[in-house]
Amino acid sequence: MELKTDIAPENNVALISVISEKFEGHQNTEETERSLSELEELMRTLGANSVGSFVQNRKKIDPATILGSGKLEEIALDLKKHKVQFVVFDFELTASQMRNISEIMKIDVLDRCQVILQIFAKHARTKEAKIQIEISRLNYLLPRLSSLWTHFTRQKGGIGLKGEGEQQLELDRRIIRRKIETYRKQLKEVKIARKEQRKRRVKTGISAALVGYTNAGKSSLMNRLCEQDVLEENKLFATLDSTFRSLTPESKPPLLLIDTVGFLSNLPNTLIEGFKTTLESIEEAELLIVVVDLSDPNLHNQIETTEQVLDELDLNNKDKIFVFNKKDKVENLLKAKIKTHKYKNAFIVSSFDKEDVKDLREFIIEFFLNKQEQFDLFVPYELGDIHSKIQKFTNILSTNNYEKGIYYRVRTPENLFQRLDMNHYLLSPKDKENLLANKNY
Ligand SMILES: Nc1nc2c(ncn2[C@@H]2O[C@H](COP(=O)(O)OP(=O)(O)OP(=O)(O)O)[C@@H](O)[C@H]2O)c(=O)[nH]1
Ligand SMILES: [Mg+2]
Image 1: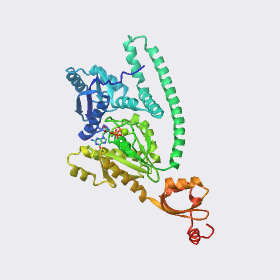
Image 2: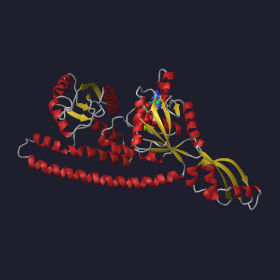
Image 3: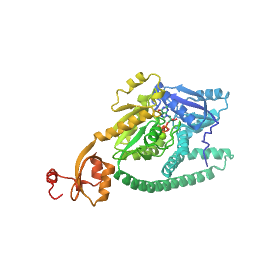
């Protein structure tokens, strides 16, 4: 059985939230409003029309209904003026809270979790993302099944059916648990395959991940830096799967960019696990490019959210640059620039500006160049693949031909040099002396 949970583009919705000192994520006006404006964006992404938002300030939350029942009745009355299909609460609700509220308001109730799940489900492209979202959806459903069944038996006329309902409920729970298990297994298999791909990638270059708040412009930058077509949309969570593309025109060594799922400041607990799994691909990156929407008045919060998630994933020890995007949308650029001063390695761009993208590309390459080291190599003529590796993955500073092979002085990142297995051709200072004296080379 399915919950009636999907918001259709033509639907009218009303948004409801609370400010209460002990309620996580909604402890003061600022937190509640920020989260609510995210929820508005999520609604816009679904195409729904929000007729208004209602916020109650409460000392303590009511465990049965979060807001007071009087307030809920008042809102319901107010909503009679509009044709509203759903009220959407800006936090996760338990099954019984949902049922209680729905009984008081006589309208279908959704929570923030369901909204995000719906968007995730719509935007997932790869098998991995689809499985992950299905697991999240079932995990959300599992503790809420009983409420669905009581609702159902009451609808059917109630009395006498309770036993039947309970049996059915147990059966449903078992089916769902089994489904989750199957999906988890499938996910494991997909992950093993992905690890193999990753190993191959790691061997052939260095990588940087575009991370940051949803809708900041990560995919737009990726497309322009790599002359590619990753879906970019004015929607939240347009990207759900990580994509990998080489910087174009190619740099030396080749630099792979990874586009990732966007962050949100108030992600319901039930969804965090799935969200983090989709971010695992960041692990392989040597550099994090944190993309921030410069035109967002909450940009410091955006960065804070990003830093928090990176901390939780234990990825905050990586090198970082901050790219402040959408400078074309900013009215007072000077004022906006001042906001960016406190961030190290900051770069301001508009992804629509070709020159900016070109400069950003140089900035990224420069960043890696500064981390490169110098090596002296001697490679016998017959080792064709080693010569081509050197051409592709290193910056050649000088070369010289000898009787048996070629001497190279190159610059490349130390870790890439190790991965490419070129140690074997490294010249010691003594070897180099001999080489210059042309002894046996
Ligand atoms: N004005 C302006 N809009 C931009 C700029 N860069 C991107 N956008 C727009 O911002 C919206 C979001 O861009 P995306 O590249 O999809 O953002 P994202 O960070 O990948 O978003 P998610 O995948 O949802 O995390 C799109 O409508 C872009 O056209 C910019 O420099 N200036
Ligand atoms: Mg994207």
